[in-house]
Length: 154
Image (cartoon, rainbow, N blue to C red; front, side, top):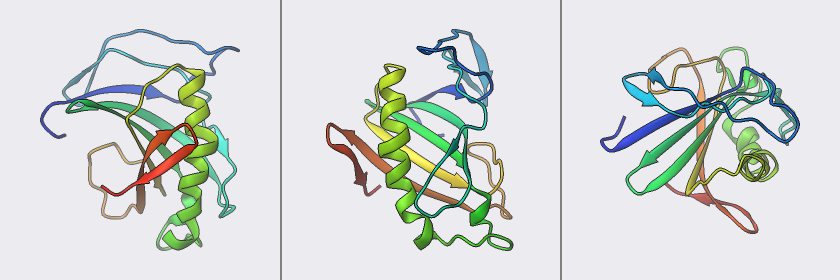
């Protein structure tokens, strides 16, 4: 984790009641204090242009320097290099759709702030910041704006 990065974890374990819910709790996460846990619908499936099955795994909130980054991590078994049928080129439009159609409404619904949104697709659960040479992961970053998400070259 980069110096100056503080991580809060938003898990996808408990369904939020109508209107949203916030559960404040302190816990240790990979050597960092997590002071904010927000509950979301478990395994929330999303429709994406590639047609592959995509489900929300977790959301991480990082303070990177002066910016707040939200990391939306999705399981997408269709991108698996040995058994999947979805290439990066096939999944490229999924990032924009997930950002515009899921992330922006989520940010608004839960009154979150984000300077940068990172969307990751992974073929299997991989703990953030760890290496799994057998896993396939794709990443894209965006800046949320009033007219939608704008791709950010990082």
